[in-house]
Every structure is written in C-alpha cells, then in structure tokens.
Image 1 (cartoon, chains in turn cyan, yellow):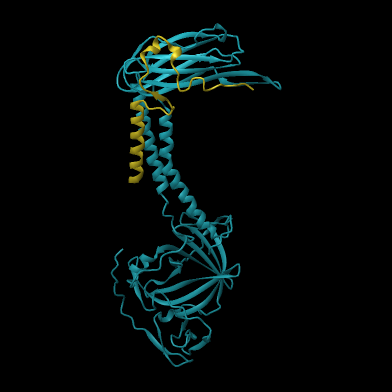
Image 2 (cartoon, rainbow over the protein chains, first blue to last red):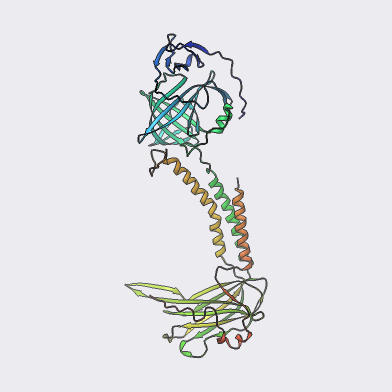
Length: 434
Length: 62
C-alpha cells in the first residue's frame, strides 16, 4: 500500500458556535454528524437540528484524554483517504479493575465511516457490517466462510468523547460488547437499547497506522498478546514440520545407504563351553583374525544357553601388531519362573556390543567367562565377531534431534495462544495481567 | 515452501554427524582402550588383568 497521502475531495467544514461557551465548532461529517464535542469547553452538542442543544456539559473532573492521532489528521487506508473526526475512550471493569481503550472515528464523504481502536499498542481497523453473521454453534459464528470463536463479553462505557459522531455520543454511554475472533479478524456485536450493531475489525500494527497517517515519531510498542493479534509463529510450525519430513527422508536415504553399503563381514565365530567346576584357568584367547578396510566398528555377539543363571564375560579385543586393546565386560542373565499363576522372565540369553572405530589389523579376543561358583551346570555359548555393522542408534538419535526445532515451534504457538486466551472469558487459569 | 535457514543448518549438522558416526563406526558403548598390551598375553591369557576383571559380580533373578 502506498504511504502517500492522497488529497481528498475539497470539502468545506461547516461551522457553528457552542451554545455553552460561544466558541467555534467545526463539523467535518456533514449531515451525518448528530453530536459534536466543543473543543473549548468539551460540552457534547446535539447538532441534529439547526437549533444546537447541549447534550452533556463538561465535567470538571473529567480527565482530558489526548488522541494519539489528532482530530483532522488524514491518512490513506486501502486506497481511501480517511479523516479522523471523532475520538472516544471506552472502558470495561473486570474484577473492579478498569481497562480502557481508544476509538477513533474516520470519515470519508464517499465511503462513510470507519473506526480505529487501540489498546496497549494493538490497533484494529474496523468497519460496521450491513449483515448479521450466522450463528453456527454455541460460541461460534460464521461470516464469509470464516468461523469466529467467542472471546469475551463486556459492558463497555464511554468515558471520554472528542470531535463529532454520527450518533448522540456522550460520556456514560454503555453497550454490551461480544467479541468473536479469527485472527487477524475480529467480529464485534455491540448491543445498545435493543439494537445490535456488528462490526468487523482487522488487526493492524502501530507501525502500519503511523505509516498510513504519516504520524511523527514511533508508536508505542504493543504490550502482551491482543485478542485478534495474529500469531507471529503461525505457519512457521507447519513449515518446520514439512522441512522435518524432508530431513527425515534425507535421513532415511543416509540410513539406506549405510545399510546397503555396510560390509557385515563375519570375521570370527566359535562355540565354547564353560563350567565353574572344571578348574584351571578360565581365560583364553581366540585365534588371530584380520580386520580389513577403513576404521569401522566391530560387533561382538554372545549367545548363551543360560537358564536361571548368570554369566559375566571379561573381554578384550587386542591388536596383535600394536598392542592396543579394547577392554570391556558384559553380563548376561536369564531367569524365568511362575509366580502367582503368572509366568515371568527377566533378562535374556544373548548380548551384543559394538566396539567403535577399530582400525584394520590383526586381532584376537581374550575371553574370560565367570559364573556363580555354586552353579555346577556348564554353560555353552557362541561368540561371533562381525566387522562394519550398521548402528541404527545414531539414526534414532538424529530423528529425535531433527524433531526438536518443529516441536519448539509448535510449543511457541501453544504458548502464544495460551497467552491470548488467558485474557478471554474462557481462560483456563486466572492470569494476573490485563 | 519456506525453509528456516537455521533449521536447515541444524539438519545438515545432524545428518552430517550421523553420517560421520556411521562411516567411522562410532558407538555409544563405553569401551576402555589400553595401550601396549604385551604379546605374551596370547601365551598366558590369565596373566592379563583387564580393567573390568574381577570387578563385577551379578546377583540376578527374582
């Protein structure tokens, strides 16, 4: 949208004199204006007839609110030039705490009236609707294909008026306001004296307002999350999850490559028997075997016939050429039985271990089995050594790590929505904010 | 489709590290490395004292 202010049609403001203080009062809304506030004495004047009457006299105690967009300022929104002709401050009271927001009345002689509302740096550009949204469910209405959720009901009271209005605006004017949201849009139903007026607001940032009206300086920063403020994270989580899917496909391709290219070379296997009652030295060494190729892992598999028993293996993979050893121990236990009519098992008869990054060379294994000395039953076990076996643990870890960013993004969306609804009539937890 | 460059970088690092770990045969198992094991171990395996030997005694079962 262009930021240049287009000169509106040349219009002449109508002037009159305030019957209260005699000061001049300008009317910019032509025949639409029903009430105007005297800029000198702040009396609200009824200008619906040639005989101007005072609707409401100014109160000494009335706090003089200053509009952030001065009356008479013109700006361009969606290609139409609008002039600020009215300003009011409205207030709701929640738990005895008053919360107020500003509303600006915009006028264009060809397009009528629009409104701007501002609360804590959050702005809405609002137009009244000629139609009533369709009530589809309790707390939900539909308009032009979009579904709006009920956010809150409040009793709004006008506490300050300035400028002119197409109705008899005055301090103390009340309305029951229902807000329905579908960010960045918001439907509002204002009920006054049996009349309900629906309006549609669109969330605007302060920067956008400042640019449209070419206001000096910078707007106040927005505080908190407003009811129809679009989530800055919206759409990001979906994009993140789509990216994650592509990465998962890439990970699967990497896994497929290593699964196919892994050599899984059987380098040694043998069956042994061990008994605690056999006496003698339990440790022994295997014949020398050769590990070929680039540094890769070596998988040792042990399969026993343990039955309600345990065994411990003190193991070392030793390089015959360099004297380097990979020293480790493995315990295997397998128990089973029946207890309370139900069978149970604990442990298993097999175990495997992956020895990382073993260079090529000539190796042998030193194996030293150990069992409960009270157990006399011998144990048979198979030792199998394989070279370059895929380790899928890393792929599982990678998958989890790749999920972290989209999960965090999803959580941020949830946190934003929680902060939004915390301010509604449907907050799950009472917040301390406004 | 929009891609988050930081996420892409993260994915490249994760995939790269996974490929490197797989290529080099890394493992999460803690394996103690011992240098200069004498060649006599082959002749007298019982003389070798491993880090884990006679360290663990399992008392299993329910």
